Image (cartoon, rainbow, N blue to C red):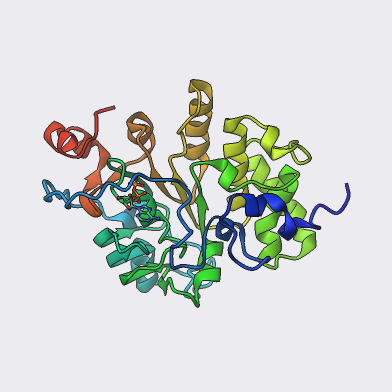
Length: 330
Ligand code: ADP
């Protein structure tokens, strides 16, 4: 194969999606975003439907203790050594691996899409983010790897505040998979797309092949290295988009609407794949069956605030609450 790593930053398709505002060596999640002020960052078109925040009809308290559920064993961004004995402070850090404190966010047109969101997610936890269109789910997810930075409030990942200084490290730690894989794939080959992230993170070339192979194997796409991404089916492109993120070895995976547009088989395959992932998982979805099947915890957003947070079964059993927030039982 000719050197698959050559020529990537100049790929014209990166400009054709209109979102590659950063310098040529940006990691791939920056392909779909600017460096934090949000002006060009949103990967999808959204109707601007501002309504006043609905009242907090219910607030389900997150009852289980996440530290009991998830083993702590890998290095914290803050610097804990992998495999070292687990100190109480580390348990605390793992329980608050993702932490949003009173996050407000306004788009450049002045519209405030998040009105003070506070949330904690433990390391290894699997959380579904649901709510009607325009609730602020995508806006929130774009805060998790610094594509958006809060107008007020704080986002921390593994104890590190997400800001302009930390954003590069944060993007290696938090992988964002966009709803439309075409926002994430723009190389002539699958290999180059999956190699892009680690390459631009400075991973030694000798390790790149191994990372690509591992990521493609994890999504069931081994053997597709030389294929043209845009010729693959939607389900396959979604898998490759996930591989472009897995190759960076993130501890957190954030998915926007992973099952959108998939046929029943593709959806089943995706559910099987999501089950195999041991990273911290945050998935926004309107697919309540998928949500009920995979995610023990549900965070419900409406009108730019969190209106519910708790065990999925309990929330899905509350018909009045579901109806108040435009949700349906699976
Ligand atoms: P969801 O993902 O829950 O559908 P979003 O986070 O996409 O919601 O949108 C939340 C709110 O922010 C919506 O009212 C939407 O119209 C608005 N919004 C999203 N992107 C922009 C933008 N680039 N400029 C102005 N408003 C936006």
